[in-house]
Image (cartoon, rainbow, N blue to C red; front, side, top):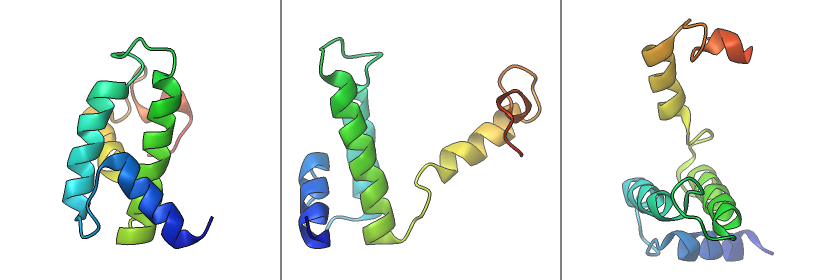
Length: 97
C-alpha cells in the first residue's frame, strides 16, 4: 500500500477528516479507546480492533505531524508520577528514567 493510502486508511479508522489536526486525532483516539479497550469491551475482536487503532494513531502521529513517539506525554507523566517507586516506577521495569 502506498503512503497516501495508508494515511487515508488510518484517518478513516480514527474518524479524522482530511484536514484534521493532531488535537482532533488525540481526541478521537481517546474516544475510540474508551469504546474498544479490551478491559472495557468484552467482544472477541476488541483486542484486535484496539491494536489497529493504536497502530493507526502511532502511524499518523509520525507521518502527518512528525511526532515520533505519540505516547511521550504519557511516559513523561508516568515518570513524574511514579519516579523511582519500586512497584510502579521505572526501576522495576528495567527502563532508565
